[in-house]
Amino acid sequence: MKGQNHRLATATLPIMKETARELRRLLELRSTRNLHFQDVLLSDPAVAIAVFRELKQARPGACEQVNDAAHAVSLIGLDAFHQLLDRLPEVQSDRSEQTGGRGAETAYSQAAHAAFYAGALADHRGANGNHEVPTAALLQNPAILALWSTEPESALRAHNAVRDGVPTSTAFGAELGEPLEEANRRLARAWAFPRLAKQAMGDWDVFNPRPQMVKLADGLSQTTAASWQHEDQETFTELLSEFLDLSRDQATAWLHQQATAAARTLSKLDYPLPGFELMFMPGEVEEEEDDHKIPVFGTPKPQPSPSPAQDLHSTMADVMRRIREQTGSARVIFAMLNRDRSRLRTRLALGGRPDDGLRKLDLDLSQQNLFTALMGKPQSVWLNRENSETYQGYLPASLRRMLDPQGAYVMSLFVQDRPLGLLYGDGSALDEQGYQQFRDLCLEAGTALGTGSTVTDSAQNAIPQTPPS
Image 1 (cartoon, rainbow, N blue to C red):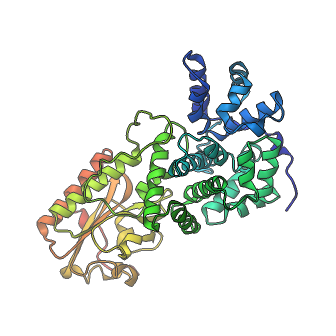
Image 2 (tube, rainbow, N blue to C red):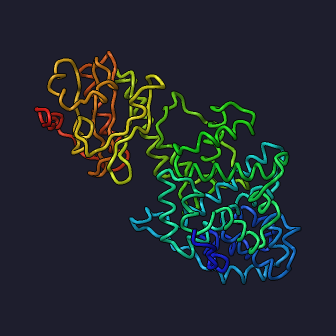
């Protein structure tokens, strides 16, 4: 450890552009009351932190009696709050390949999700409308936010390490030069955070549910932001199960609902949204549409237009159901390329057993096999007993064990001449008519998702007919 980074405490955190725009709109309305600022302040940790720092200057010691940022605004005064907004810089989104289009927004999103989850946990305990718990959750990692502001390259290294499975405290502690927990507590004191926020960062009474909710919400937001398959996910799911008094599966379903609701609520901000990533997780396509509306924390807002993720999910789910109904396929899998097109992973599954290997398909495209060969161009193949010897060389044992020996349809899916993934269907009732219908439905999916790409009648023969050397 290098020791304390004194630049952190003097950093001015930029706020999101949408935050500034919405708060200025509210300030112009005569009907606005301080409570109306609450949802906006809970969605952007930088503006909430700025409010508490301003309160410390205006009224030293007041933080001990203030529980949330809207209350702090009432003590500062609307004129002073307006002047504060004018002084604050705004986040400049970095869309470079180096940051993957995320940058500081990742840390802001984690904080906003922690506040959202904490609000839902508080509601579960009957503390509806209590903003103290979500505010404390929003403020749990000020050192990470400050590092993004002062040393973005260091923050990016830590962020990438977390995505690779390194614990958040370890990755950011290495870049901060001191333990993350100590840096957070130091900034919480320097920036006059509310009492519960500071309490949740340190040793707290195990019988007090409020700091427990704050820490649980923070842990859930950190792990889900890193990956829905993060190694710490099981630990926090177990804690969530105990807190909610639900089974692990029920607790997981609850978390998925909250993540989806958070994505809807925060969709106006330029944040990475783990709730939308759920639509690309290996999982089951529901047999029936579910019209149940997930409740949204905070003031109800008009539902946004469907996102590209939603369009992809709904389009593929519909096509997969029709493939199962019309082609004789008992099991249907949609596998999609990752961001850099280096791997092909299962994203949706319909039919089959929960432990099917295809549900966990994760292929390295640098390794040659039937599925990766198909991704070279729009093409398809019907695997059956008559051509099994032809494709034997393209089916390593690990992949062959996953496939139905009675036959399978496979087709690469291209959208606007760019590879997206492939569709797979297998079963005992496959035939020529089903294969043609399968290909037509795959083409329909590509067209629905973009302009699509034409698969010629001879494309199915484009794969080399001799096994790879």
